Amino acid sequence: MSAITRSPEPFEVGAPDGARLAAVRIDGVHPPVLAAVHATGFCKELWEPVFEHLPLHRAIALDQRGHGDSSPIEAPFDWWTLGRDVLTVLGKDGGIVAVGHSSGAAALVLAELLAPNTFSGLVLIEPIIFPGPFFRAEENPMSARALRRRAAFPSPQAAYESYRGRGPFAGWDEAVLRRYVAHAFRAGPDGWTLKCTPDQEAEFYRGATLHGAWDRLAEVHCPVVIVGGSDSDSHPPSFLDAQAARFPDASVRLVEGATHFAPMERPEATAQVVRQTLARWG
Image 1 (cartoon, rainbow, N blue to C red):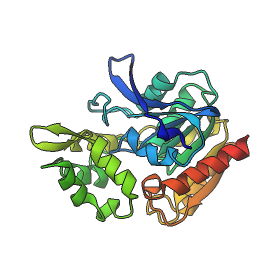
Image 2: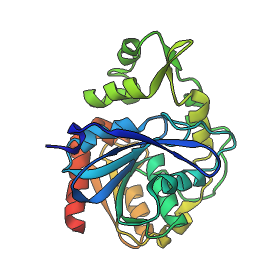
Image 3: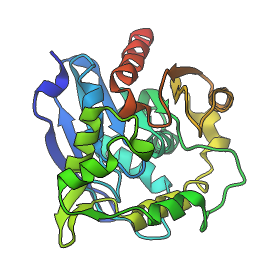
Image 4: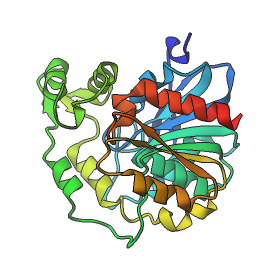
């Protein structure tokens, strides 16, 4: 029996600046509490297929602002806000093991830097934490690509057919893709419309190189596992090793046959990494 067989309970938390942060909690009996934060352009529900392959932990997954059911962002957007949002949703009581993907992994590190000892361990899947120079990238390929993204489809099925087997979605697990189509969109005047609009996604990428967490990774004292896809084109093994070397206590794991989108392509294998990590941490 897995934690996700019971219905996730949605809830909202108000941030100090007035933003609303959407999340879900799943009851469980095994410690520790697990928290999960998604990558840019996605939503909290994409963690459900990963949770299905984990024991009965209490779990919390949140929508980063600008995504899912959380409030939109305004330009210029500072990624340190993502860390503050994580703390707003989870609190600062400690004892949480958190899993983050891409910008979500960076958000967890920023949260730990803002409030040390919030986490008893971090599983960081290809975190967007790079060495300097640190700057706001007004013009960059990722933002340009996001702005070209199709924002609406006539129906959920049309969105599904457009993504299935194509581009970055080519290797996605079927259950994850269907959750993406169901939860990363909403009904709008133009049809089935992305919640994270192309403008919002592009703004995320502009700020990705500014936060400077690379120079502060030595301040993260909880154990860390950095996870990469064996076929990733953004985080090759040499770079994963370089990231791990910046932390006081970090190791590297690979998900075989996965790209940067390991949790979406290989949810069971991603869960296995988390499960083995929890067993090792005790």
